[in-house]
Length: 320
Image (cartoon, rainbow, N blue to C red; front, side, top):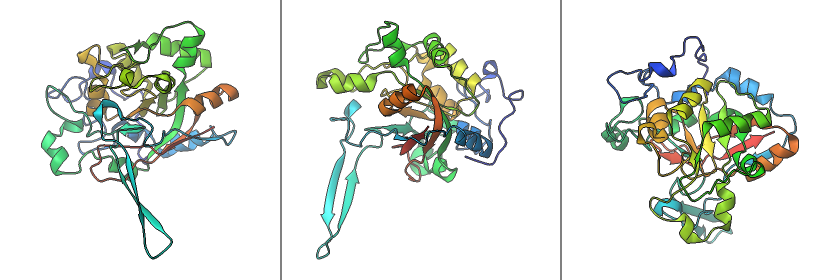
């Protein structure tokens, strides 16, 4: 991502020292990488972590992590549906196409302009709502300028683990995946984490969606499975030093949030500048990881280069 030196673990502020900007909202890490920083935890993706991640490529198997832009019909949370218009460039035998879509209607990265602190109405590094409409600050283009979201990915296949252990985990309810279960998944897969990892969690939402009736998945505040929103989860994400987190579920955290004090969209996006990925296609990846008994891989994602972009399809690929 950058040529900056990774934060020394001994110098990284502890979770208990948050918020870093004491006059700011709870949990913020504003100023950790500078007052004008727009990359947040993506700064943990360095030349060194990229080189280390290339050593995860041992089989040469490439797997896309994006669903088609029109996968979810109608889109969840009443978002605009995907539309493609093909235009014939007469008199030539040639075409253009024009796409209209919401950047969060299918597989997506939530950028730092997507969600701010709800009570203080502030975005990452203390920016105001007016900044989101009048400037390109915190836009997803900054990720592209920094080289994308490229590094070592690690998949925790919670869905397969839960099925094997008889753990009920309904997808269309506010089912919280507790940290204790994720740690058991990691242990069962013999996974070791490294600072700068990109974490993926497979909840089984995609499987359930494909088998569901439309009324089960729709509504402006439809319930969905996700990682538990609590201090314990946030402390773990901070201490592990993840650069980004992503899952196959529509909101990453269980929705609606079960504890507003630990709403991860606030803490991660607005507080730490840590990207949240949602509705990722982890099906083929999970199958290949299980086949190879290998749950870490090289991951590359370059979002749309939209100045001031709020969110984007990831254009992600995992290489085992």
